[in-house]
Length: 141
Image (cartoon, rainbow, N blue to C red):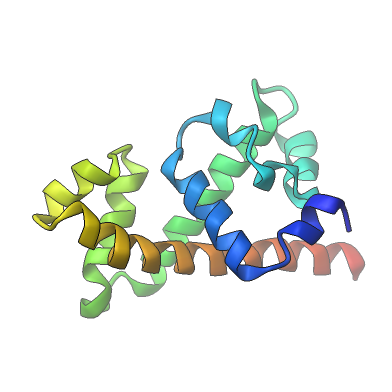
């Protein structure tokens, strides 16, 4: 376990890191510098599948986050109480900022950030963590 992996072991810290990364979804230059991009799994993924690309760690992290969002949308997309959270994630994937998303939802930016963004981050973090942990288990077995 690397130093970065140990620092990210707290779910609260991981949620903050995922939240920051989601804010910059689609920007490989920033994601490449994210502490998440230095998780052993992301580094290995970058070397194995993104080595020929510019900013491979940022590309790997961006694709993993997008894939996690898609899984969240697929699994909870039909639940009425989570509809606005799903809309938040869809708009985020299309590059909209928090302010733009709040306008689309016709809600205050503060409410969107406090409620829907927080839930979205928790859900994406859960999927992100399960994928990283699942990949580590595959390497062990």
